[in-house]
Image 1 (tube, helix red, strand yellow):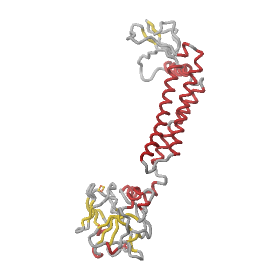
Image 2: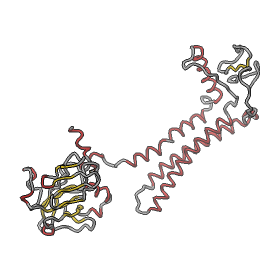
Image 3: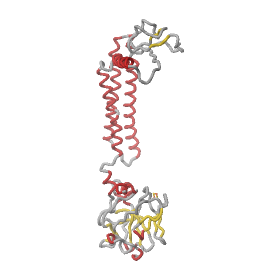
Image 4: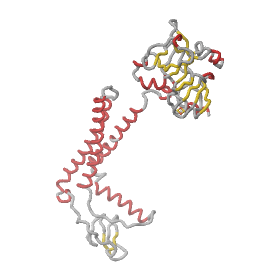
Length: 356
Ligand code: FES
């Protein structure tokens, strides 16, 4: 703490009275009878205070940290683009992830080290004490606050030291880039609306057993049986699991007279064989339990039940809409094939919201 009359700008000033005439704007006013030094060590002088000739050297070191932050942020983006994740080899994925994280970590650390080094080596290191005051200061106080900002600018050299300022701005601009790249990478490449509205199914695609992928003849589907079905070729698809999560189907045979079919769906079943999406319309669990006596499908997650004699309408539970039906027929060899994709999106009832 400096004595009255010898303090510089931004320095705490001791005074025994209530005024501090002669104090520089921006200086905190401390009454000597209020605050005792609780035992803080005396102020350490900065390198540049001891030897002004080393100021330039310190400035370059600070800038070097910020430049390192920029370079490593760019390297993080470059490594993400150059080595895309998704390879089936987990050890390669591990290395790619490590490399990406390493560059981000170095970029963050370099920004922090640069900021700390700047404050430790170049900014003014005087002790300051600020007394408590009301939330909104008087005009005079506010004017002084503005001066403090100016003083801070002068003392840190933020405006004056263009090399440091610009490299810091560069580091701060570069820092969010890896985050942007990561979050973009999480989003689907195509419009999510299209991706979620459509499945792999298309006209003429055979219904095959899950998981073997062998096609199913209509004659193999006996009364009361149920098949877990995937589209033909799914096992070779690039995004096999994503496609399966949308296209999985349950296939059952009922007596044709047990089916209550609306006119526009008259040709969606083949001789009593019906196919429904296996993805529950509540929150997307697989509806895998078929009760052949009642022809009910049960979702084990929250017990929604669907009546497949009535186009899979909901008869119990939290699901809000029927399971979408896959229109089917047979091909020239007697194998079951899709007539088209589903006519509505599969999965949770999110899709109903725009109509409610
Ligand atoms: Fe099927 Fe909840 S997910 S009832």
